[in-house]
Amino acid sequence: MTRHHPDSLSLMEYSAGNLSEPHALCIRLHLDECPHCRSRVDTLDSLGAVMMEQQPKVTVSESMFDSILSMIDNEPAGAANAAPAPRLSPLQKLLGDDINKLPWKRQMGDVSVLDITDRFPGQSEQVVLQKLAAGGKAPAHTHRGEETTIVLQGAFADQKGVFNQWDFVVLDDKDEHKPVAVGCEDCITLSVLSAPVKLTGTFTRMLNPFIR
Ligand SMILES: [Zn+2]
Image (cartoon, rainbow, N blue to C red; front, side):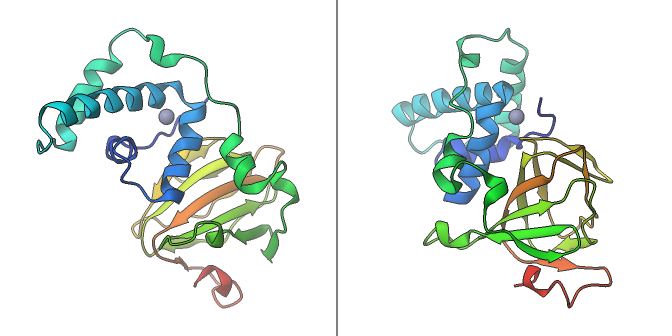
């Protein structure tokens, strides 16, 4: 069960169709596994449709959406929690059947990466799959811009907590972290980077491919 969800603003932007393709994919993968966020997006979709019909130019603040959503969260779950979309289908489309068998590039120690930016032509963000071997550690790093990450397999932990499969996390330049893979599976994440990662540990130069 996922415990880390996209924020309301991201869900609003997703519902409005304003997100870039890689960002929308991260949200979509989370929604497929998270009835809670799915029901929030269903609500936003309906709200958006009503607003489009009535007042095309109305602007609504995030705090207003938050209060609407919190009212809805307190209502009993309805039809919005119906059957989830087929598991992994957007991923299978993008990456094939087995993400463990992709042409991973070993970076150093426990970290492998695969840059899949070219699968999203015309997008400005960098899109990277990262794999941390079971029980492995990644070097300490900060983020120069915003990095949106979803866990596709396994789990990792850092000082903010444990992130399990389908958990969603956004890191920015204030976050320095040193993730560790937990559990017995390799941890695989999909990250969308608005600016490159900046390593803060000893191996900065050797890990240069991280710093594009
Ligand atoms: Zn969620």
